[in-house]
Amino acid sequence: MNLLEKLKMQKKEPGEEKAPKVEVPVYWLETSDYVTRRYEFEPDGYLSVKLVNDSRPVYHRVVESFLNKFFPSGYPYSVNEGYLRYTQFRALQHFSSAALSVLSTQSLLFAAGLRPTPAQATVVSWILRDGMQHMGKLICSNLGARMDSEPKRWRILADVLYDLGTGLEVLSPLCPHLFLEVAGLGNFAKGMAVVASRATRLPIYSSFAKEGNLSDLFAKGEAISTLSNVVGIGLGIQLASTLCSSLQGKLVVGPLLSVVHVYGVVEEMRAAPINTLNPQRTAMIVADFLKTGKVSSPADLRYQEDLLFPGRLIEDAGNVKVGRALHKVVKPSKLQEWKEIFPEEKFVLSHGNKWTDMLLEHNATGEDALRGWLVTAYAASMEKSFHEPSANVLQDAYDKMNSMFTPFLSELQAKGWHTDRFLDGTGSRFAF
Image 1 (tube, helix red, strand yellow):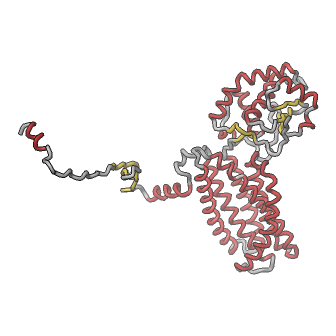
Image 2 (cartoon, one colour):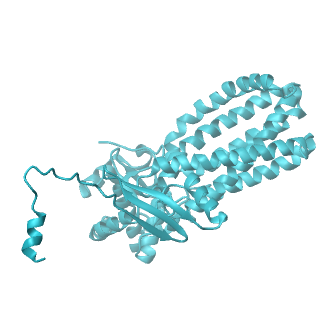
């Protein structure tokens, strides 16, 4: 049969109906690490994935299932450095805290002369927590700006307050005639701790978010906390019925759990790479830049932060102090002179014997604070013997800052720092 005859055979006869088109599904199989998956395009255009075969050991499958339930999607590539260590110590912190809370609740009930029945426990909980604890929450709510500036410090302080309140509850059987006073004071401290811990949770989670996955981080972090609390409550119940059935046992085990609790939160906070600018982190960035010529990332500085006394002065960064009131720092004549020399800047510098005060305008950003810090650091390195920098030294330092600020800022932002705001807590600012 020649080509012409074949073409004739393929021609449709008049009135012949066209055969319906059969859509063949487009799919393929991929095998990786003993796992076979089937990928198929659905009619609506979406790609579906089905597990066909999984020949991995049970251990590997359990680990993957755990990661999917308790770690953000795409882990470890979807989070910043330090998240695993942060999560490990967060679990330890909640585990020890839950166990300690069981012992404190048992002590409260015994101190009140009650048997720990559910109905009586509910009444005691309402009186103490909804009363004194809410008062602690109201008082601590006024410190929100300071928590934004130093979330790590306030997170540690929150757990110390929580353990202090729990300790008072454990000791309440020693003075049953002062039950309401001791238990109320304990819950007052715990109320302040609850506000501080919740207020600092978001900035800490935000420091780990790498792909806009803050909600996923928050949800998985709370899942880890819940799991640790459940296990910790189980341990607490076991201890309460064995070693800690007496007050003497609680006085031995309670402090040990408290030490583990505080240690866990300290290591947890050290692992968090906070990427917002506050006075301490800004000074550390400037000091490292003047020493090495490189910009440190949040992960580089996380273990160098002073979590208990963040207000310390750093000599290599010019000994800058931020937030003092304008009328206490600068005379009107000095302020007018400064604004005449640097009219476009949103900071004012006042050199003293021990430190240099930097005052910021109300709308100053992190970039303005960095500019002022660099000017101070350069001026200090140019002339350390002067009690008060002359206008020439300040002008030279200002010119040097301007010459390198653009690449410095670009590298800073590339390392993940947020320069659009400067968190100085409740520090004073001014406006003309």
